Structures are given as C-alpha cells and as structure tokens.
Length: 265
Ligand code: FPP
Image: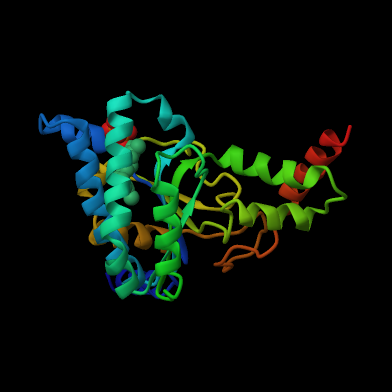
C-alpha cells in the first residue's frame, strides 16, 4: 500500500508534456446520441475547446495544437462545411479578447487560400492581436494536412541547394514547431488522420473513448497523468529522457535526404 502511494507520488512528480496535440473527434456522434444536428455537436466542441484552453497552462502545458478542420474535411456535405466555417468565423470574431486577456497566443496552421471570404483576414487579425501572449501557444489547424506540410516544405527548398536544416526550418514555417510530447484523440478512434505527422514522430499517443464535447480540464489532467507514467526513450535505451530532441531524429533526416535526392533527379 505504502509503496503504491510512493510510486503514485513519483509519477506525479514527473514533468508534464509541454506540447499537447489533440484530435478533437466525436462531435457528430455526441450530437446523434442526443438526436441533435451535427452542427450542435461542433458548437459543443467549441465549448470544450474553451475549457481545455483554460486548463492547459494551469497544468503546465505550454503549447496546445488542435485539429479543427483537415484538408480531407472538404469532402463533408456542403451544409456541414458551411456550419464549421461559420463557427470558425464566429470564434475568431468573438474569442480573441478572451484569448488575449488570458495570455494565449493564437497561430492558425494550414492553407488559408481556400477558406471562405474574409476568414484569412480574421485569422491574421487574431494572430496579431494575441501575439503578445506568453502563457500558452495555441495552434488551431484548419484546412491542414501533415503530408501536405511536409511536401510543401520539401518543394520550397528542392529547387535550391537545400540542407536538412533548411527543410526542418521550412517545416516550422509550414506549421511545424516544437515536437509533440503527447497526442490525444477522443471518441475511441485510434488514427493520426494526417495530423502533425512530422512533429508527432516521438509523441506518446493517448486514445480515450470520451466524445470531444465531453472532454474538459479534468479529462486533460487524466491524460497528462497517463503521460507521466510513460518512459520516453527516443530510440535510445536509457531511462529518464523527458523532452523531445531539438534536432529531428536521424531516421527523419535520412528520409529528407532521400526526398531531396529524388526531387533533384
Ligand atoms: C471531428 O468530429 C470534429 C471535427 C471535424 C471538427 C472539430 C471542430 C471543433 C471541435 C469545433 C470547431 C473549432 C473551432 C475553433 C471553430 P466528427 O464530426 O468527425 O465526429 P464524428 O466522428 O462523431 O462524426
């Protein structure tokens, strides 16, 4: 009993994941279970997102990356796409003061050229208005594809004499940034669905049955506790490494070299 308590305390003393990524899945099923339209699920999803943004810095998270709309989501019925875009427009218009007051810096990942009129401008304004935030880096992925981000970075540098470091830098410009420590997917699905493929190379994965609209700060704290029990080795054999390497792992560098050699043929 004593030793169980001691090991629980030891787990609690482990540092939290600094970068948490979330695939916010299950809005549709949450709504269906209540005989509501799918849009109602997405609206409830925004409420859950707000709760998680509030809780994340309190729990020691410094970067929160969330998947709101994938490149493949354009294949959904036009009515649902419109509802999601309207929600996004409303979020950008109304949430910015709240984010700025809470010290949250917003950055939107993904393509902006296919979004409905005015949204790219709203994104730019929101990013500027929250640029001074230092408590939490919030990244919302919209019209995003992890494979697309990698290909865009590679094609930007492929024409010139690019080094692996150039590609890595380009990836950051295409939304890369810090490696993901913990990747959460709600609703029982266990897939990456083209989210942060590069950054999640050494992420710990956490799948939970909860539908996204029911996820909150307590659920996030539970996921962080699960992370603390994991031993991260980054391909090595030792114990105790807790943060992702600054350099991309060697295997990824090898892949980039292959891609560059291939594109230069
Ligand atoms: C996946 O659930 C969820 C989405 C495709 C949209 C996620 C959007 C939000 C959480 C709210 C929007 C956020 C902003 C910032 C406006 P699903 O619809 O695929 O659910 P299902 O698998 O149960 O059908």
